[in-house]
Length: 97
Image 1 (cartoon, rainbow, N blue to C red):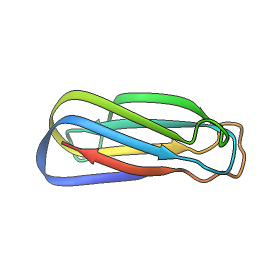
Image 2: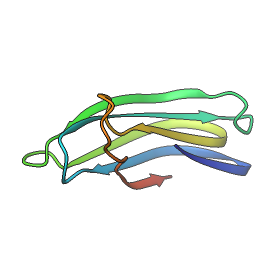
Image 3: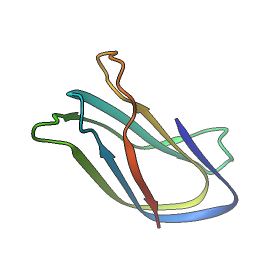
Image 4: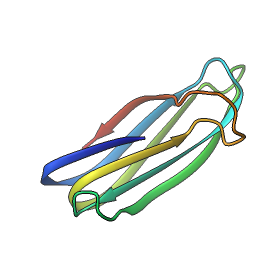
């Protein structure tokens, strides 16, 4: 889990995530959510699952155009392998604008 906290409320318009897996075939899930009260309560932005297959699919890029005002916390939770395997999470890039 990755949690970003801000003392000053932010406005976010674009979220970009890039995941990479070059070794194991697996299905990864992530949940992205935000808070306007410092992390006491959260609202879901997106929950997504996708498959990695090192022979054909090693990257996954997600672009979200949002209108979030008053953001004081942003949280990204990753389940590296929904089947319970021993894979590691693969966030390569997170961009906020």
